[in-house]
Amino acid sequence: MCNGFSTRTSLGGAIAILHPSPTSSPSSSSSFTSCQLHFTNDPLLPTSPTSVSTLLDLSNPEDCELRIHDHGDLTCISPSEPVMYSLPLRSGLSSLERRLDLGVGGKGIIGRAVSIVAGGAVLGQGIVGWN
Image (cartoon, rainbow, N blue to C red; front, side, top):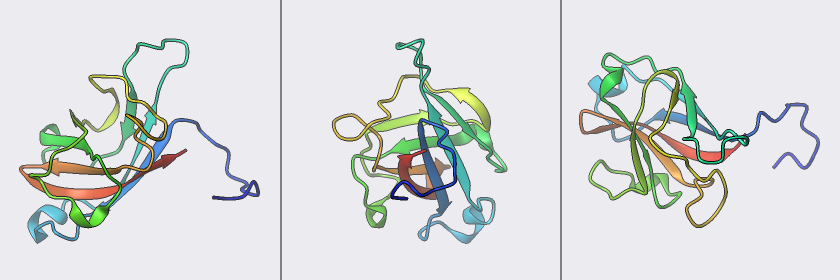
């Protein structure tokens, strides 16, 4: 995307920038502004779970769920839609329950829609990309 002319250093892994969902209610969206999710896999431990780091500023962060969707279309995300992965999400650095494929295609998460759901409402959504 930067055609080799970016001054930004790659951090590796994957990143998703999430913004408030246009379908979220005003009360739920007021507690969610935006956030970044950074996904990393330890190359020295090929069976270790994926680490995710984020800064969530929510009233009840223990109720947050990370959903990685089968597609990359942000216009059709709803709480009742089937997802590829559904994992608990905490603020800070944490390990997910499994190791995710940080690649493209198949079970890879690059290019897929990602959302944060709390209390049955989609708070934020974005697309997973290379970091």
